Length: 305
Ligand SMILES: Nc1ncnc2c1ncn2[C@@H]1O[C@H](COP(=O)(O)OP(=O)(O)OP(=O)(O)O)[C@@H](O)[C@H]1O
Ligand SMILES: [Mg+2]
Image (cartoon, rainbow, N blue to C red; front, side):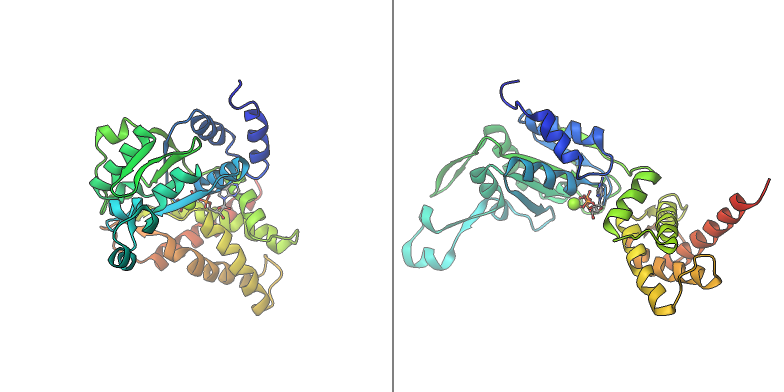
C-alpha cells in the first residue's frame, strides 16, 4: 500500500456524502485507484455522477462530461484547429483547441462519457487507443501524454436500444464494468429527505413516503419500459410542498391531500416514465392507476386484523 496510502480514508470521506452505496463506492474506487477505466451500467439517477464527483473532488482533479451521441465525432472528442487562426497562421499546436479527451489527458481528469454506446464506432476507437496507449498522437500538434490520474468512465443505460452501437467485444474487453441498480426504499427515502429540503412536519414526512412509493411503482407497472429514478420522487416532494401552500393543505389525512399528490405526480413523474411501445395507455393514466393502487394498499395495511 505505497501508491494510495489513504484509500481507506478516501472511502470514508466520500461515504459521508452518499446515502448507502457502500459496495458500489468501494468497487468503483478500487477500479480507478488501480488505474483502470470502467463502464457503469444502469438506469438514470442511480448515483453515478454523485459518486464520480465525490471521487474527483477528493483527488482534486477535474471531471469532464461528454454526452455520447451520433454527433460525437473523433474531432469533437479530441479537439480541432481554430479555422480562422489556421487561415491566418497556418496549422500549429498553438491554435489547437483541445476537446474533452485531450483536456482530461492533460489535466489528469476523469473523462465521463455518458451513454457512450450512442457514440459512433470511430469515436470509440479513438477513445480505445487513448486508453490503451495513455497517449494520443494529434496531427500538427504532437503526442499528448496522459497525466497519471487520467481515466475514462463510461456509462450506459441497459434499457436504451434505439440509436445505440452494439459494443464490439474489443471495446468490452478493455473496460472494467459495474452494473448499478436502484437503491432500496429506505435509502431512497433518505435521499429524498436530503435533496428535497424536507422538514420534520407531518406533511413532509408523509410526502416523502408517498413520493418514494409511487415513484418505485412506476418501475414495475406493466405498461412501463423504464420508470422514474429517485429524481422523480425528489421533484414530487418539492412540487407537492408548494401545492400544499397554495391550497392551504397541511393535514395528509384530509381528502384534498390525495388530489395534491396526484397533481404533483403528474408534474414530477409523467415526463420521466417511458411506456412500452405496445402499451395502449397514456402516462397520465398509468400514474392515475399507480396513485389509486397506492391508496388502496395504504388502506389495506391500515385495516385492523
Ligand atoms: N446514494 C445517493 N446519495 C445521495 N444522493 C443521491 C444518491 N443517489 C442519487 N442521489 C441524488 O439523486 C440525484 C441523481 O443522482 P445522480 O446524478 O448521481 O445519478 P446518475 O446515476 O448520474 O444519473 P444519470 O445517469 O441520469 O446521469 C442527484 O440529485 C443526487 O444527489
Ligand atoms: Mg449523471
